[in-house]
Length: 561
Image 1: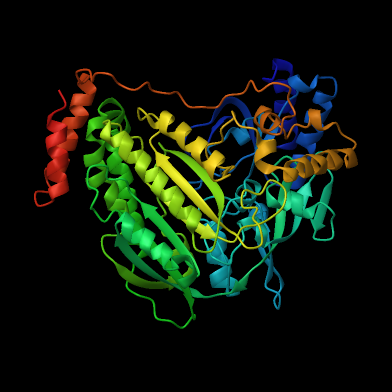
Image 2: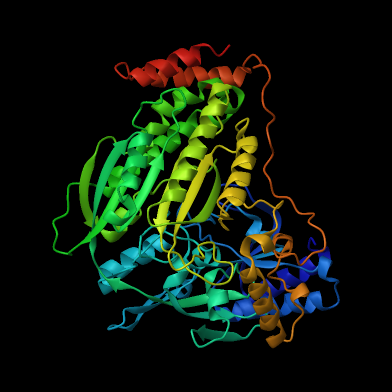
């Protein structure tokens, strides 16, 4: 329920009295989630959180559950352009948003040198954490997300993961967690707590605010990264020959080219740890970041999304020439510090949508091959009908996973997990249709779980998807709130999104889909501003005279009226 004028006045007075920085309005990095009326508190210490939470709980006492005020934590400190939340879901949909901006929430402290146990603040970004561990404590995380800018708290709340044959999700590294509970009290829980596994797997931020966690690291190592490019049949052959077990870490990027079936449009990165004294190769992270930023600025400058959405026939040529530049130019072997290799992509476009699914697979990767062949056949069928739903790439990671609660990587003892992400501009015609078709395939055929931080469909039954773990999680949640002497239905940490997926609300009335663009039956003449954008893009592409893909894109752009 939106804040009333009197409630807003109470909270503003609270901020003024306690000198808590306050602003209005919040949005996530991709701008898929916007809360223009939310009050955003910029938190310096836990005492400030307790005061705000006490006030919110007091205001909620006399309210009906459906009218309660909601409160969530979100990333963001405005120190860099990638400080906002990277989650696509409305997990931060709230009346009041807290941003843990003080350095106390980003501390890294060595607790046990022999066991490599480190205490980390929940607001530290994972890339910064990796660098501090490596350079200050001579430690590394054994697994880490591709995106360096997600916070540790947000990553673990949504069951974030990296890659690694023998590795858990990021939550699986946690040995203890400290929460500021819904009643304002602070409690540390570890493996001795009866519900630790249910909470650790993916707590979704609804048990309170995770202030810090104690995690198990490994001695610092460098990584050797071997990059190979190949076609789909080559990748399938590599998987069948044991790709995922020949190297301890594998990540795959597949760029759909639609009309070029024989193009090497798949990049495999195979990593293995090497000693710290291994000599670095001549790869400059600053130059790599600059080149990635240049491609994103290129897309923003010419408003590529609008051009592609209105004239999707040029998508194959755009993929062949522009998107392919995000992949490595040639096969290579690189040795660098762990954090340089694990976070090889450091620039990201805002205008994207990500449908991610995680499913069990055997050690031979049988289910991975099934997913690859099904998705590529579906894309070909779409392309044969002049439909091109994906405009970025498909990403695959292979890892061990973490059991417990609503972990998306729950697995049986003899199974592994494949994370399969399909990324596109959100307004591309036919992308919603393709996304729905893939949702049905992954959930029904591979019994996959949607990634909590990516696109979350609300027309599926999560009790069926998670089985007994769903019931265990809800029981744990109820016990947690009983211990706080609070009604879970009045918890400010549960918004309508959480109530819907957890089947707490009687009816699913919540929708968070972006605006859908209907498929075009006939392309209309270009609007004047699009003609101008196309003209500017043509001028830029024509500079690349010796590139065959550039020439194809030029021909396609000239056909836009």
